[in-house]
Length: 167
Length: 417
Image 1 (cartoon, chains in turn brown, orange):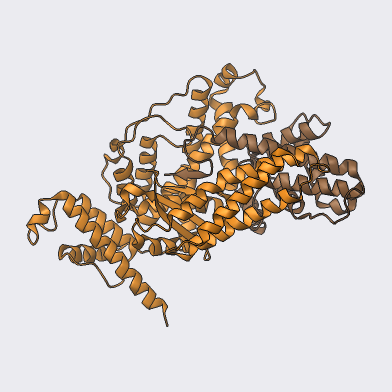
Image 2 (cartoon, rainbow over the protein chains, first blue to last red):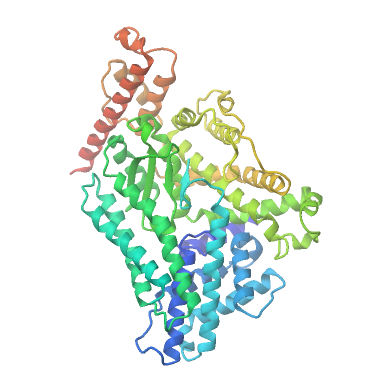
């Protein structure tokens, strides 16, 4: 990766400083994705007329914002070097599990993730479309499941608490 | 209600009840109470989600995922609550808290909180959790057996480094560098080996969906190793030679089994020595010899992947050091002073604490230099001490801690109008 790309990416990161990055090993990711799935499921129930109180959407917004951050690349940057292999693996797995797509390469995975992120960001516009809401919910669930298992897998050889780091 | 959901709610309720009990404790520092309030907020949110999940309406997979998240939160936060509970125990060197808190607020964030406790793990450690770090909670555990030993203070620098790593999103900064290095090594030098260990692939597939899963473990190990080295450099830049002495005191000779998430001990020592020399620090050439090579149990594919990880980590060492320098540039620049160290040594030779605005880096380095010196400062005036090395170390430590206290009082006086 060129120094220009590093500088450009760092500027972008500075702009998004308050949004934590979308990372496979973020301990909050499985829980955030699960809460987003819950809020989407409530939107589905609302769309189907099964509940009448308005659902919260804060977790959906936070989750979508993290995905968006992962996909915003500076011009000319190489996507392959900006998404780490663990995160790529989760995103790829989630697309396979939650959609009928079978992407052949990373660009296709990212294109699909981009579409799903857009839909999450504009969820207010899709409140009547329960099929779409279910697809997005399943995508969030897949991310939650895959991130949780990936985190256990990566941290399992370490003797300490999974959330601690020693000298 | 399903048993799954009922049990998940019960577990979260019990954590919240435990927090109520802990809140009634007396804490020596307000930061402990703030940490409790934060964890309570996290569990309050979980409780709210679980209470709104409805077995007869919500999707079963969604219920299960949220119950699992709640369980994972209990696993993650119960040790944090234990940490807070132990922070009520004043066994450790209380004098370390304020100076370390100053460092934390300077390098992690102005509103950062520090919880420091002596703990029942020998290796110093910190909790690395985005939600805690995002809110500026830095939790550092130092070994209970060394409680009161102020000379291990520089090792807290390494743990603060972990918090800086996450607070500055350095994973995102270094991940592409590490990925690029791994891919270049596979393609340019080890492609045949790669094919022997894994499925036959085209070179163009190594860094795409087909090839990435194969070298994913090497990436995870290399990133973990890079973080460890960054933290070592933070300790080194903050505390200079004293970090190396403290590291050696606590961990030499090392040995045992190699943990792939860490560089081998001799490699760590070599990287540290190279960085120290670059800065003109005075350290013995034979320092790395004080650490034994660990035995790696990795064989076959794992051995290959670990070699790739080691190589990738080595390739970014200069950038890790530069990043540590950059992130610490505003913390007491130019604080090192031979003259201040001489003042510390002169005061300690008289068996009195030092005063007069000596900076932390000089105090801790002068103390370590006395500790490891073959020339005994008390030979003339206190011959009884000179003959008893353990008593000498005890007195030296007392002088160090008392000096920290004096310096802290001076700083507080300076800050007050």
